[in-house]
Image (cartoon, rainbow over all chains, first blue to last red; front, side):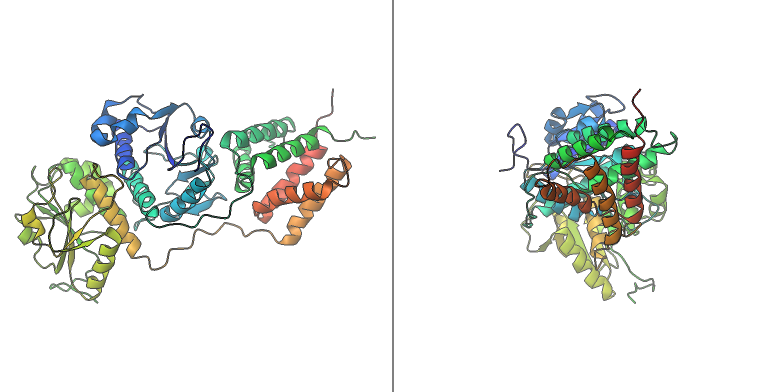
Length: 253
Length: 253
């Protein structure tokens, strides 16, 4: 039985809404979650505060418990705590070196991870702007909903319905578990600790040269390491390697 | 080429909303239609009249032409004029001797009819009550959206998104290849050049401690980087990073 560290079984992905603006949209997401068997709702800095009566209006009675249990976070990083695989939803091409899934494939991927006891999350951005690149780089993969039209986009409620539906459908067929890695991937906070260490060294070395260049350079670097999906032991190894490279260099003669 | 009686090609099913109550819901349906390549909207006796500004508010600019072109009818029978196969959407079991489709199967069925030049429609009922039996009996089949929960139902906007999405997906014969990485993975010899550089630094630092430990440690390290499947640019970036960490360390004061 898959379990988190506190021994609760993980049976479905968390839904993370980043800086949602309208309570009605939060309620619409909760309603879709209720319809399709999802329950773990996490809100990052909702613009109009929380709780929000418009959310309850839209959610209807059946989804109110999901809103009652929603957890509030100040940052995407905090909301991703304990999550092993995060999927960023975005309609636009972001030109990042991350795997891009269509909904059904993403859900099969998620079910594979859950079957190994690894927590997953689907991350949605603010209504108008979508996820910022800084948020997307924290995620392991991208989910894009194919539409028939290039110049129209799904709103938050619509997107959550499509992904909820894809989630429910993916559970109606048995998907083969992927070959188990000998150790599970590290949780996000452990990966972030490695990134903090590396970023500190690189800043000290003036590696990024100019503040303007840093965001893209650092994003590209993070994506390389995220793609490797390191487990805890590997992360420790890499932290030691980076530290040794930086600190244990033999003194010049 | 499939044609209607007036010789226009039929490429998608009509969407018929029976006695819709809220303009916002009509707009949500139009928006979903726009997103997923549907265009023929028919309204049967909309409760709050027509046109309805709330519909336009919800539809956004991209779906406004669908609302502009919507046709208004007084009865379901009139709206079904010219339609060969009508599919009634309903969540409840109606105990009618009609074929019940899930969304994907319904869309395949519809595409088969369209290919033969036969017009099709998907019929939605009023928000609160759904389709009446008198309306359903006029239809040829039933479409039901499977949800994970017995006591929750999809609203009109949500249902139209699921069916629109299923329509769009049914038209994709083969799932489109995921967007190619902007650059192909680097050739093996380039990866090996990075490994040689890194190994040289680590040997100099006595990172592996003992010759006996090195083979397994080095293999584990290589596996981390190999899993990332770096392209040439990323490899150059990582070589620069490792070199900078090793060589450009600021001197101790």
